[in-house]
Length: 192
Image (tube, rainbow, N blue to C red; front, side):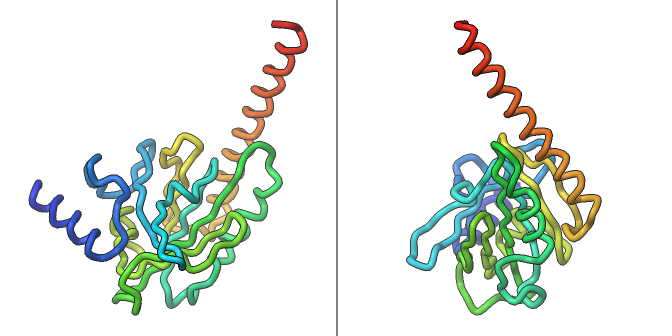
């Protein structure tokens, strides 16, 4: 088990995409209720960043294939998720398209392809992030909640039920924060 963990760690380091905190142990997949597996990618200027740098209160990771989205700014469904939740008060929803290829892209490292407002596209050149998250199929979605834990895993993100469930969680969190804020201001105005 230890030898396998070390081998996985070395493979991710060599491949360019890697977990951002190897000292905390290697994660073998995203699990509901657990902290999200963080990873490092490279920006166009060569700066290394981690997923944590992009995260919003809700972060939707859409895992797609390079040959299906042609390195676009994200799949249409991911774009829709971000845009339909853009007006939610007190909550920022971020979409990250992590695209990969069965073989290996002609890039040797994980890198940011496109940065739009709250919508990012990352090329997982060697499939290291996909393996880190335990994604075995073609497409999948992982949702990270406000506390940095995985709150939803779906085999596809172009599903109305998936989007409705996510929307409900986002609205609930927005309402909770609005109530919290109203309570705080009420206490201030009452002098307490």
